[in-house]
Image (tube, rainbow, N blue to C red; front, side, top):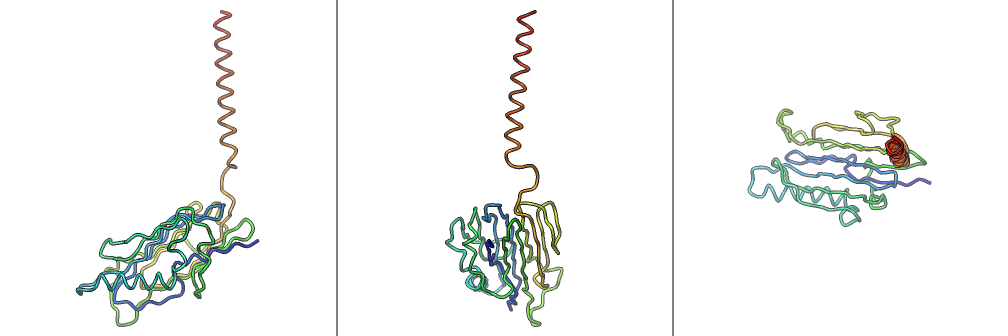
Length: 219
């Protein structure tokens, strides 16, 4: 059975904005097919009087196009984001069911599918501005990052791997194409091992104490 999660972050979308986009995603996928973490979607605020309203409107447009199925879903909280001159929204996920992300429809949208005991993550991010928008590379503070943590080992990816986490990073002036496959089975010993080991330890300590007490009585 294939369970598909269209994690509608941003996919194959070129936004012509007079400024930078900040897109930061940190997602943790569980073996129970839920997602926790957060996504920040924000736009830099310019110098005009209504720049903040324009930035929020641009963030609204992103939400309407690609995140419309997330707001109001189980385990999702949307809060205002206003940091470092950027305005927009933070979406926080708390064990959000995969069904809440089933409306990805956009071409190139980031998707996460489960087939058997493997999750496969793919997608593209492209916030490249038109030629009239010029921001020096060293002035870009946008922060385009995506991190996804799988339950188990990573078997294939074009991102940077650390443990069971894959990370991609770029600026708003560049496109990134992402793919990763990871196990749905948690790494390390099965969940039942630690309780069994702890119980065995308690039994061993109890036996040793009983032995010591008995020796003292005999002595």
